[in-house]
Length: 376
Image (cartoon, rainbow, N blue to C red; front, side):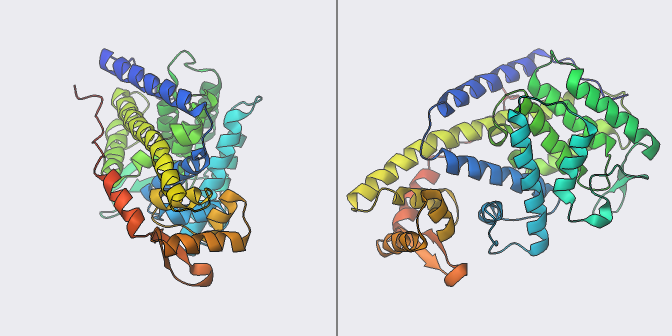
């Protein structure tokens, strides 16, 4: 038996309607192709990867995650954390492909495969294989057991029931609600020895992707959940609704509300980023034109504006340049005060120079707080 999908109250339906309005707005804006779309999608995916992994204690900068995504060596992240990031990125890439596949059904094999992609480098944790014994989640400081998963003998049947529900259950329920319940039931079953939290958050993203809500990088709430304050709330909510052990009889409305709030807040943030992306790109185009630089340099400046640092290889790849062309462009931008170089050879990177810093400071002052949809 799984946890049941709760009946929504008027306030929840209002929040869902607002999420849908924002989704339609984003879909409309994304229908037209823009030069900055690829970089924005990459940054959103990196932030989702960062969020989900930071919840588990694997911390890396967005810039290092983008390097790992491109198959490059990160500048600061340890090798062990880089493996966690690369595994999760592989799973999210597969989720993106599954979201678009014309032929698809959920099955245990798909879930096991995603788990293997995430933690396959931990062979001692039998990745992609259902756990053979009990599992206990402990408070990292007190070592107190905060959750006990269902007995191992029950897990195959529960996982099969979840797969049937994913394919056939509650299909009339709004997708954000179904995705939240998929997340909650999978994390409660805790079917693997490791990676259960990341798997559950990824499954939530897959459900939304399969329902064509948005592409995964635009529909994920992993970035929002990975913020420290929200991470504490996330664990508190799981604990309050799970009540320390698998007992699928309780009310799950508060959990669904938590997820709806997260979707609403993240959608506000993504919509703002999308609007700013166009404004920033056009502003940088004007500056590049006035400076007599090649228009392709806008791509480098945009990356430096949106991220903490830029690497030559990323700019070279984005614009399809030779190593020499990319290096010359970046030297010119540094000479004109737009970028500031650091490091040497393969470790060289660029941060915002004094002229770029002025523009970034101006935009930072415009940021308005997000609105909690449940506070009227």
